[in-house]
Image (tube, rainbow, N blue to C red; front, side):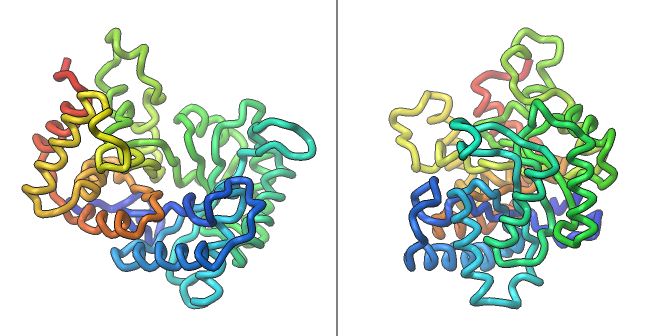
Length: 328
């Protein structure tokens, strides 16, 4: 079933699949290790694989490999200058690692820090603007007026076209909107067949299992009501069903789900990766899936996802299997 994505309704040429660039830039998360030729080659191969299956949307964050992921991507753009105008480029800020001011990680949505982060992102990527900037995780000390001031400056300077958030509830977005005038167009959340609380929370209302749901109630409905694009990070469940983790040592429910996914992959002549993502895309919210693997073969394995038709019964079959229990 082909869906019009919320971002497409806003005139953005968004694709159902996004390539998440978190894995690029080498193995060192501190960012102190200089990029090698192998790191740059890997970035080219990952981008090539993504483009070959129709992905024209790339997701970054300033903390990924402490900036080295963005630097690795910049080499791709330098060698292909025309590519920038053909893709959507998104990055995030707000998570602040240990630095000269503190020895611990914290969140920072202050005006000064947001502006500082965006200047760094643009410099590392070697671009003049971002299509979308996301605030990475909720900052308990957020002052919406500070965020609004930063967004105004960034938009007026042409550095950011659109704004969004990551890992936020509907009420947190609504709170930001008490001062922010730009539309919040994206909310990126962990969602997959393994992390399916986003579905459970809707049916566990007024039931004892609701106390175990960690997904914020009403967030999916809020985003659908306000035409906010939901992006699912971790849609492949970190390889829990595809062999990246040892299935023999996995909980029985994961083993059963992996077997069910294999059945559907064989039935529809595709891969488990494509079935996993198709399950998310079947949701009427018009979810985008952020594929985070740097393995080009796993990227290519997702190529059928947007074209797979899952019936209501097939969708429920996968979800009920992953839940490990029947409907209430």
